[in-house]
Image 1 (tube, rainbow, N blue to C red):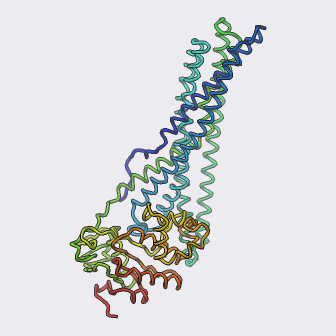
Image 2: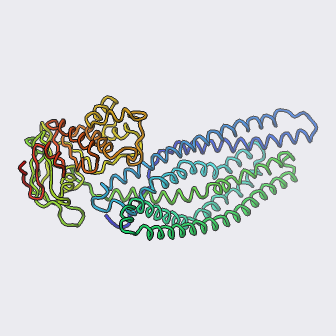
Image 3: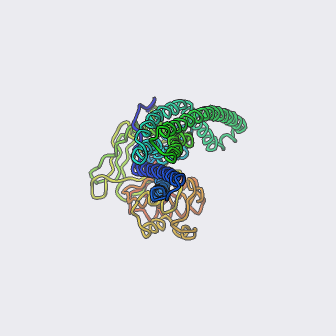
Length: 547
């Protein structure tokens, strides 16, 4: 997969109802304010005439206030709910795109600009898209259509001729806003691209800090990041300065034209005797409502531009994920053996084959230890069995004990945990798992007592990438999660490779208890793990090792 991603539709977000509610509430608020102004005009006419005030002025004001308050409250709630809903949906789409790209570290580097860009997009980018699609879009539609609501109220309640004159002025609003957005679309997109590059470089540096230190390159890398940050700062200041100039010029011209036009219409109609003094004053006040579109655009200009730029990147990421070639699942065997490999050849990308003609047969309930030097293909073999990597040649068959297709689950060397709770990480394997079943899995992995001692138990927080847990705890939690899948074949990649001695003993005890209940293949360098296995197979020579 390479090359630019073709145009793709924007991701469908479940915010249409929230946007519509925000628009309707915006209309109600505008109509209410219009009635308030007309009510004020009615009171002015009553006072200047010296007669009784009557019901018209107070009635219009009361109705207007009620509509304006209800509309404002409803619009705020709808915009907030839409933004929250959109952010969750965008992050889900990006998460799906990341997962669709396959395991990081297989066919391409696990860390670098691609990963940093996606991480930035899933956090900052998702928030910007949500603010644009979920929060601002309803406000924008309501604001752009508000002048039509105002004109309609003026036509019905005050003076149709004055409404028609104001309508001609309103027609210029969309043209101004459209030009306003096009003016800075390119510069904002460039700014967003530079922000993502900077985020990717910072992420790359943090993740490779140990290597940079060992190579003595930390200082040089720091200087490069400082230079990139300075370029980003200068670009930001240029964008802000340019935008502020245009905003100022546009505000002065647009506000002056609309208010001037409203005042002129009011004076002309009053001079002609068509409307009263109070109504004329009300029309001048109402003309202020016609500036709502440019006011909204001015307040949320940066949100809109940043959101649209981020949205294009989300589309790109989602479309790119769809280009990944799907890996066909292993074939179903005849049920006589759990795992059958015949002449399997496999490798990554266009590189040389890591596995070359591997033959292996594993019985149901058998535990096999895969050994051999680093780089011989133990992890590659497990990836093939897990369905992560398609073999270039040969056959791979997995069978359930009673025949038919079997499910395999892989626990990689690095126990990948997600920010959230212990229960949340466990339910990734089984969304319907109840507490009893989760505690069972934790007991199997010798982690139940430690989770019970944590604040909140199953609801204990797991930091980003499991940083609140020790390496051994993280590995055992990953093992417990795998057990919840009820997979027929359990694939373990160096489960004791990077943990403390106590955790190693606990995991080995877990393997001993699981032996015979599931088919287990474990890639290992540990002599203690080999002692637990039914067979030890040296992958390099594809032969059984005598013990």
